[in-house]
Image 1 (cartoon, one colour):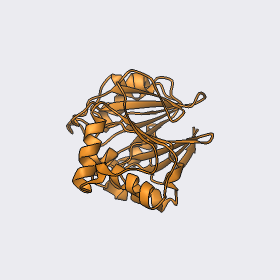
Image 2 (spheres, one colour; image 1 turned 30 degrees about the vertical axis):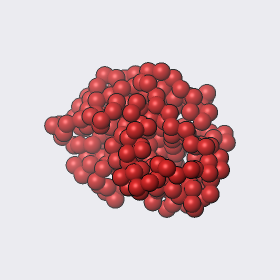
Image 3 (cartoon, helix red, strand yellow; image 1 turned 45 degrees about the vertical axis):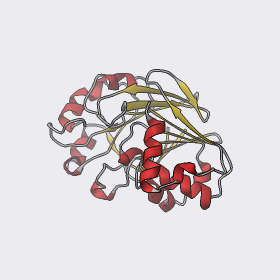
Image 4 (cartoon, helix red, strand yellow; image 1 turned 90 degrees about the vertical axis):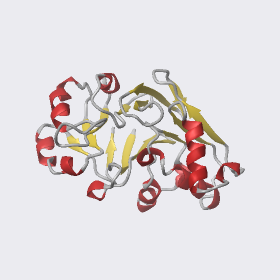
Length: 247
């Protein structure tokens, strides 16, 4: 499994990073985890083809994690001229929220007759699903977003990529990380007190209990970006847009 970090930023573009978007390639299949509002720009910057995407899995329904979907759908229809099926999966409530988002941004968009088969799948946390040939299981975490927020585990039969999503600290993260080959975990703040996000003091105390082979921090806000060297000295890696990794 190959990981490309298309975007790893927070909602505010701190450090010039794009909104969250992770590309996973295995064999001839491509699954994307999250597709934030600026993901289409970041995808194009890497000269990627949207027709490569077989499926998308969303951690939660905030704009910096799913707000790029209307642009992706329209680009797939009118620019890429996509004909292959596309699956978009996410937490319960996805169908209504995606429709509302599309209509808010491009009125009448939901009445479009797509040239490609489009499936929108709502995943119940804890229930495994097969999304575009990948094994996907989500775990509910703590991040108010109008629908369940989730951590995600993605497997291809050989390797497992795990992702915390956005969340305040919760012991559910131990389940998300357990035995994963690669854990992408958010760490928004350098100091405690930011609600519904993980801060470095809390994460550093719990790092030894996160049983993943490789750990990388994402969604860093301005304060967290200021202590990157401290984080790296603690044995974690820091995500950066455009980087690729073999899992």
